[in-house]
Amino acid sequence: MVNKNEQEIKKTIRKTYGKIALQDDSNASSSSCCAPGCCSGGGDSPTQAATVIGYEQSELESVPQASVLGVGCGAPVKFANLQKGEIVVDLGSGAGIDVFLSAKRVTQEGRVIGIDMTDEMLERARINAKEGGYTNVEFRKGDIEETIPIEDNSADVVISNCVINLTTDKVEAFKEIHRILKDGGRMVISDLVSDRKISRESIDLEKWSSCIDGTLTKEDYIASIRKAGFQNISVLEERLYMEGIEEETGGRKIVSTVVKAVK
Ligand SMILES: C[S@@+](CC[C@H](N)C(=O)[O-])C[C@H]1O[C@@H](n2cnc3c(N)ncnc32)[C@H](O)[C@@H]1O
Image (tube, rainbow, N blue to C red; front, side):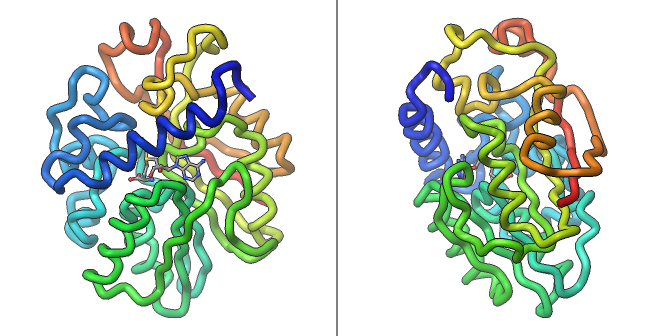
């Protein structure tokens, strides 16, 4: 729990991402955050932003265009080594980009479930699924640090892209992930961490929903995963997320990371 009211943080997140979900495809990321360039005023198209984040052009062309918002901070599907028939859960699925990329990999024998707490995002993702003819995907409403609407021990893989940093209780979110994974199941998560803790007094709601003020240090992030019961925790990728944004981050360095852990 942080000193700012948890409900206020969630309200701001829903408002921010609800607004992004309602924007047309060409400028979704420009006023958003959790997107390269956002803090310095944006300007990148969602596709440009997604390329900078790590998606391949061919991947972006293979999914519904309206699912590409450019608001992630990595490309977790690349690292998840998804197999035919697997059950995948994407936490904070937004407009569905990683759900659609995963759907292709697990084939009709598998299933991908996207979870999001913002109604407008769920609506956009469901339209994308329908228009794209996806029959092995589903989007459910849920807050990932309360109860993920998925049964215990039922998922092979949990992925997530730039969402855990938005939660106010990371350990609870990781415990929920641990609960829904099968024994031996894996989570592969792209997220942001920072090089220094922010003081509780300095937390700003807008910067929290822009994926800055909710970031933990890498050490605290990994400790939260361990506390939730995970084993074999490894950092698969680390890179400086954005340059020249020290004014917004209060001088902290924000790093994009991909973390894998096993139940
Ligand atoms: C930065 S966007 C990333 C969207 C998507 N993963 C992507 O890469 O395009 C964060 C998403 O997570 C959702 N979100 C934030 N906190 C959440 C929570 N506690 N539970 C469920 N969804 C959440 C937001 O509604 C938003 O759609």
